[in-house]
Image 1 (cartoon, rainbow, N blue to C red):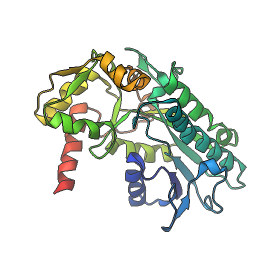
Image 2: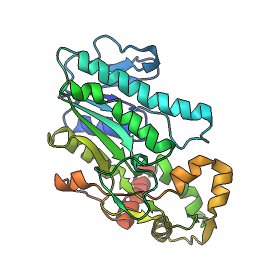
Image 3: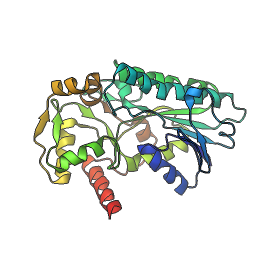
Image 4: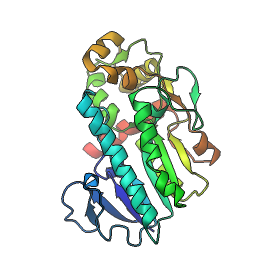
Length: 304
């Protein structure tokens, strides 16, 4: 099976490409930089056209491209970049796939649980409506951009990702240096829910979606066991054997990061993977303490 991947240099993509190849996939990649390696093509969606031949023989497309949502403060210019890097590229990809005479059978596109906004203590499944704010609006537009492919009969899946646990990128990698120094801190009142998933579950979950025809539309890619920020802080500190007694007040986060703090760090998203559970996907790391221990053990092995 020939699979095309965008965003292959990101946290998930850089691990997914070798995972797919180990599992018998012929992987081709769309790259932002000049494509000089075999099986690579240039990804420049703002040009409004995709390279010739990129879809030849492709059975599946996994679309992970998009600027880092947490990299810097959400200025007006940054919000425009975040939107364009997701919506424009996704729409171009979906429209191009829809126009092909020989279409791939499935398009899997990244999205996020930011779609739900601040849900408080309410469990958030795939049928819940979008919330209010920049992230819900962005995620809704991002997923709507898939419509041309869906209308053309391509099975489309929007994977709504929670916080992906890895020691080599993402939020956890940013936290670890502080927690390892005993400087771990609860954010705000700590009651906001965090939906997370181990990278070691993300990869087989995407592969599972590739081969499971009944998985369509939005799919929450999160662990079955979301936790509050206070629980996450306590668990990570315990796994590391360090104290975590500090508190970062919500007002301080808002002063530093603006609306990004309210939507990304202080909003509560208790997302549950209803469709994956119904499809009997076997989570290997459903419990936070075991998932964190696995991540740290893997980091230790790789550093030897």
